[in-house]
Image (cartoon, rainbow, N blue to C red):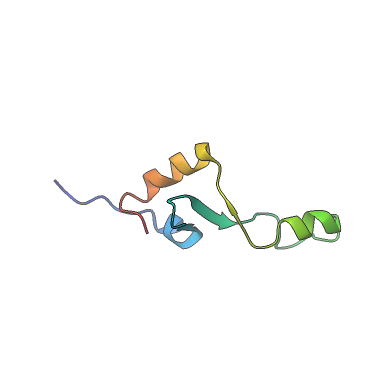
Length: 66
């Protein structure tokens, strides 16, 4: 059986937590921040844990984990 390839974009964007959840950087923090409220900018600082439905898709891109 041949080995499965990992999506190279996914390995750059996602990390696995110790409990197996997937975390990623938050979108909407690069430019055009003047039109966003301070609350939006503050709450989207750092990383977020992906929802179960998104994590299910992302795990198909990472067949052997990270």
